[in-house]
Image (tube, rainbow, N blue to C red):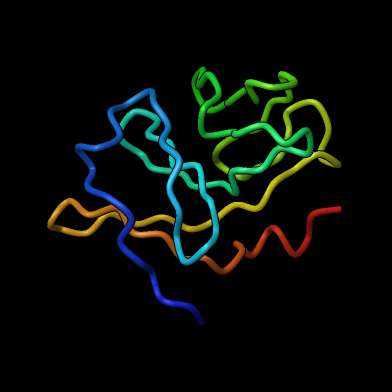
Length: 111
């Protein structure tokens, strides 16, 4: 099992926003939804940067093609056949956001 790695401080991603980060060569999109952090692979099928998309509630839109993804699991609200990798996120007592690069369990069950 991979360890959680620090990616930034909580204060660097205000509620309602996202941020693109590189973690060991993997580009991730980190989102803060009302104080809860979520991480997705930053790669829409169109080539758009999900982390630069508009976040509305738990749904982010790719700025290139408008495809939408639920930041809680990486699955499109339109079709569960459209998804990106989702990563576990924790926040340390010191306010560090930590991400685990192994895919979440539900990804193995994705179509």
